[in-house]
Amino acid sequence: KLVLGIETSCDDTAAAVVDETGNILGEAIHSQTEVHLKTGGIVPSVAQQLHKENIQRIVQAALSSSKVCPRELSAVATTVKPGLALSLGVGLSFSLHLVDQLKKPFIPIHHMEAHALTIRLLNKVDFPFLVLLISGGHCLLALVRGVSDFLLLGKSLDIAPGDMLDKVARRLSLIKHPECSTMSGGKAIEHLAKQGNKLHFDIKPPMQRAKNCDFSFSGLQHVVDRIITQKEKEEGIQKGEILASAAHIAAAVQHTTACHIAKRTHRAILFCKQKRLLTPSNAVLVVSGGVASNLYIRKALEIVTNATECTLLCPPPRLCTDNGIMIAWNGIERLRAGVGVLHNTEGIRYEPKCPLGVDISEEVGEAA
Ligand code: ATP
Ligand code: FE
Image (cartoon, rainbow, N blue to C red; front, side, top):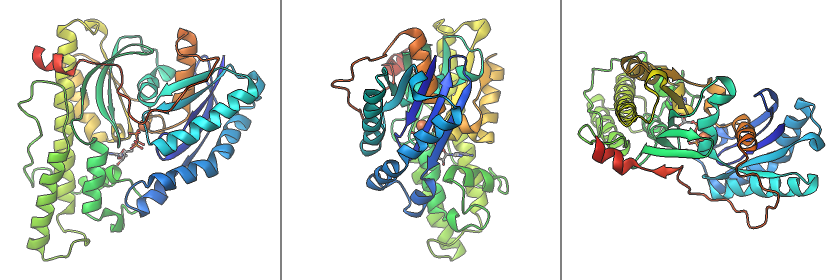
């Protein structure tokens, strides 16, 4: 079995060809990050335009590097939810033309399902396992019971951690910092935090008393914002200049973020063990998403998994962030399980908003 995967849900145009055993035969990606860094965020119409300009070339590049001829493909898998409407639309209409031309089955993919299943391309991980997805657009804890069988245990009630880190980095003007000018917000915070003292500011983790596995990051963002405004006054500098205390702020916000994420994850592990949703002797926590590449946050999660006798698994950075490989692999998983493989694409639409699986986060709160 061979699947071509296509991803355009946000700001990366990506494609890949993967086989049944998880061999990555070919891949290509065009990132729009640099363009969007300049505008201080993603402008959907700009993202759409860039997807349109690149999709043909990227899919072609993935196919040619794989040396697989389109006739040999078993199916085409494409992200159709959730994401930016204008971006999803480009990938979907391209894919529908392609499957029509090639007369191949089409597999619509849920972007977060793909993130969650990526680990199975690399390691032998059996269902059920716990997954923590932390990125710029998402934040969730879920129990993965099967290829398309998810129990949502917790989610962010407001923004995602990567979004918060990006906002803090922007507020600190780290793009003007000589050492961090080309880094994403989260990466810049991690870099700068190494030079700071996390105890210099005492920032309380959010939701300390909430008995569930939900997250919140916007309160934290506002607290940090106030600290920055205060420091600008104290240091007598203008908004937009780099604070002398920027590294301490970065260290403190990273520490608080790590504590919050670790604490919510700890609760989810305990809940799953108590309810026997995870095999006690063989419990696995998979962490993925752009924020998962943060080593300080990973360390905090390692402490939690060690204490609860869980195995912590994390795909390498290029498979943590958006890519075509995970979409192609999700296609393979669905082909093997025989779920969601369409021979008729009539009426298929993209869905900008679409929760993952069955939401039991309220039950988790009651049980805890
Ligand atoms: P989606 O949520 O759909 O996956 P996305 O493009 O925001 O979309 P990713 O590409 O997975 O998600 O990750 C990007 C996010 O990860 C950004 O918010 C970025 O700041 C954050 N990030 C990247 N590297 C690090 C790091 N070392 N530490 C913390 N955050 C990081
Ligand atoms: Fe993603």
